[in-house]
Length: 341
Image (tube, rainbow, N blue to C red; front, side, top):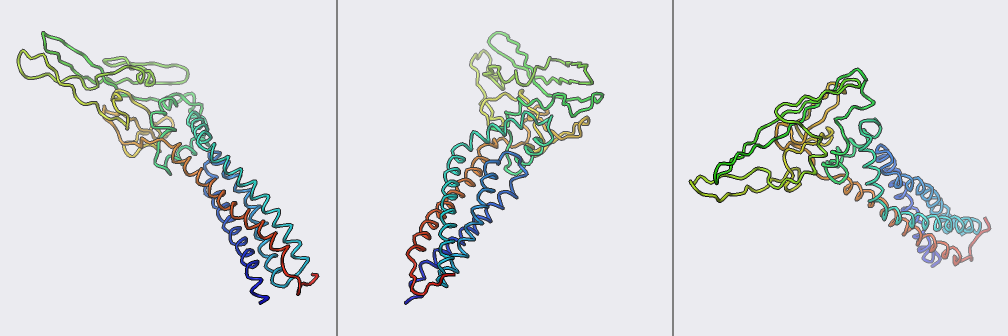
């Protein structure tokens, strides 16, 4: 009968030990697996370090509590009571922190990822972090691939030697329209704009058309991408409009809008920049939509970060309950066979 009375206290101590062990494994796994992504997962990594301390005290509670319950030691029960109280308070604080981190994870990930994108050509650490994240989650840009239009990957970088020449070629399309009577003919021609940057001198050579900056092209109000097809019937003034294409997941985006993307965005067709020995791809090279990941990175990263925080919240919820139950059990433990040690 006496042993049966100890089953519940023993089960509580074993549960604290098991959850603390799980807590320890998850915390170490997050630190080891996600620290290479810099400060993108900093809140989760910081919380993991805090939870390692909770796990240590939880394991201690489980081990000492088992001994105290099994042998009926008053001294060990008192020690276990104090440690269990500490575990409960620490786990409760971690639970609240995890909820706050989860609530702010989206804005945190977006701001830090966007900042690293802007520093892609000037900070090797940020470059590696962005490439690692885009490779891992098969994504491109913060909210989408088009975000890279603001990163100016084709601009001269402090990482490039001042005497090194960097040449970037961007394909664009100009449209010439000739109208005769009721018939309208639209002719599409390709124009190559080659920009050569050497030291402080910049020479822009335009063939057949002047290339404007990729960022300004996006602001153009282009209503007709592919022109209009002429009806073959003589004297007919009706025209049939072609359906707009879906370019990089964006409906109606003109194919003339080209964005230089890092190699980690590309699925095929990468180009080597001889001046930096870096690989890039152009979204519309050779006048065609090329292969690249179009989905943004913030959403999948935020999902992972949020799941990590809430995972900690779940484990800490159990530890809070178990710790305070253990304190109550230790107070009510039968003392008929208790020893003073």
